[in-house]
Image 1 (cartoon, rainbow, N blue to C red):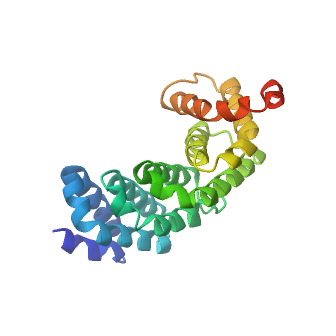
Image 2 (cartoon, rainbow, N blue to C red):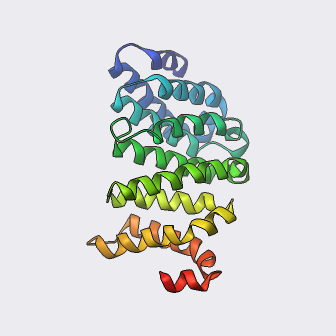
Length: 221
């Protein structure tokens, strides 16, 4: 059945494209590793190609959701062959302005990126420095634009600190800015609890060793 679904990912009708992507997510959830081991090349290359060319937001969102589900059940040995292509697709959207990459798409991209990092572990290390620089650059832009989306920043800083552990010099250099962002949201967001409070707590655990290396920075914060 999947061989009948995949060709329609490029169908001219966006509803059909969306349905095909949704089916892929359902197959992944149902058959898990058995599905990803057999169809990783067809599925990943098809979704990446779609994301690089589709202009319909709903389709893009479902595409990255389906890719995230697929990545969850892929082994590191499989995913290591696709890291660069997936990152190029994710970041080609992420670096765009909010008109071309709205907040819900940006959050979905970060979710997908987080899954990729978690499942590729050591294989991701060669891509860490470039990824960190893209993410930290966006953090500065978003703060300058007075973006106060706590969901977005929770995901962003969680992934920044994950990636930063692979490039400790960069994490050290930016640890104060990251810490000040965490403090800003903790001090200004009401009912700070739940999933994103947990993300912030984990981020603190990752950056505190770097902040402690510089006592001046610790007291300034």
